[in-house]
Figure 1 (cartoon, rainbow, N blue to C red):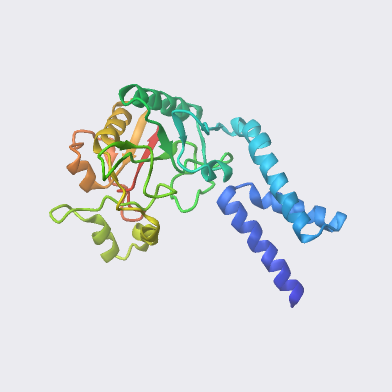
Figure 2: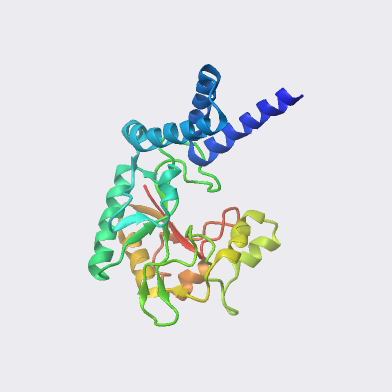
Length: 269
């Protein structure tokens, strides 16, 4: 029984690491083999996993990913991750076309608003079309990316590089009283996933930041005008509030997805 539970625990670890990083499960299996052959202790095994996973993710994966039509987004510069863990978990891979578009958009953002960097959130895994990037429904082909809103300091009104959420999700710019309320509508229809990030509210610093509408809509308009862009998802109440109704590429993602009043989803053809 103990051996069965031990095997089940390892299996769960392989599944968890594969779901969250795509390649972590394979690295975990490699460590189990090494541990069996070399009789490694637990702490040594943990160190071995970190070294194998880190070396594979930062050195090998970027070399192999172009075979699958994907390249990593930059980790520094005017286009960068909001949280470096996005890159550590291999969730920052896109097609070369999307990378070029984002680099150009980031350059224009910095030209229009000096000192402004575009922060990306989840993109895609490095390998295989159709491999899901949980909890997203469509980030599986290298053509999708989530981008963070821009914010200002509430106390001063000054532009900020900060974000009320350390992962970029969960800081909702919720519907006002007279606006269409899809978070409420979708929940009432039984779509539990729509508000699945509500728990993030306990980590959000609402008192310090508010959405910088000027910079955020500037970014959205650039993406909407780009011929390479196929779709952009934001909540309908923000599309109306921010005067973006003329852009047909900006759409409602549907109740089956998560809400999009905390980030921008953009994708290319």
